[in-house]
Image (cartoon, rainbow, N blue to C red; front, side, top):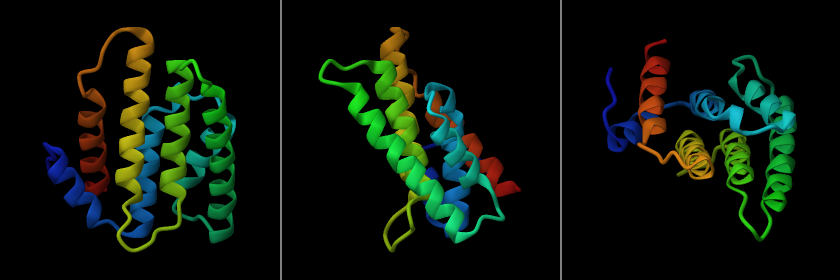
Length: 148
């Protein structure tokens, strides 16, 4: 299966199970994990990727990701530091894939959007611009996940 645009991407995500949403969302977060220095986020993403996770472990990882997200938000400050902003979006991507799924929510889509925002923030910080490469990476990641 090839995914070429956000419409196909979102449609494929919508067909995933709760666990599938969590696991592929974690892969999207993992793609930008280097932009975040918080070990709690790294642990949360690793936990979210597991197939043998318990509800208690999910809740604990969610709490860690939530604390990291709040902390990273306050670190951005009034003068925007784009590197810190990128780290905050990575924390938000981790948080998104760990949120309890409810009707009408798509944690993987939310994680993907935060990962893209992290990559864009980093591009602004470094002055290299963005060419939507993260979206293309996500399309490939999802296609590979669906094949497995």
